[in-house]
Length: 104
Image 1 (tube, helix red, strand yellow):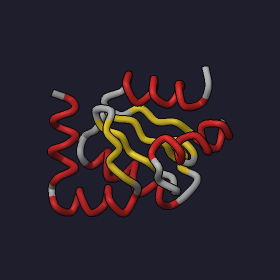
Image 2 (cartoon, rainbow, N blue to C red):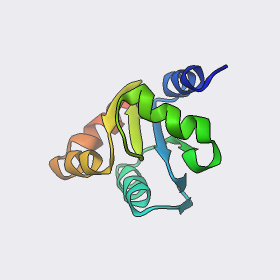
Image 3 (tube, rainbow, N blue to C red):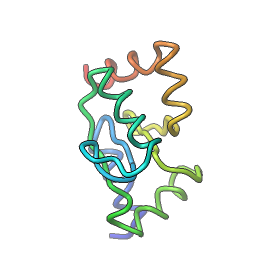
Image 4 (tube, helix red, strand yellow):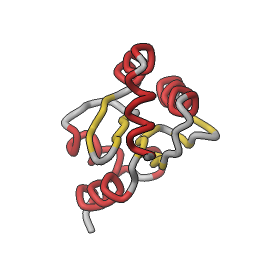
C-alpha cells in the first residue's frame, strides 16, 4: 500500500485525525502542540499520526490535502486545515461543533 492509500485509509477509519510532528503526549513543534491543546479543550477523542516517524506520510499528506504545512486536521474524512485554521475555528466556537458532530 502506498502512502496515499495509507492516508486515505487513516482518514476514512478515524472520525478525527491529526497529522502532526510528534505525539499528543510529546509534540515536537509548537503548532502541533497548540492543535492538540485545542482538540483536547473540545473534549475530542482523536487519532494522531507522527509524521516525523514516517517520511512517506510526511510528504504524502502534503500532496493528499494540497496543503504545504503540518499539522493537518481531518474530521469525518474532510480536511479542516492547519493550526491557524484550527485556532480560528476554536475561537469562533466552530471547532467544538465539528468535534461534537464527529463524535455523535
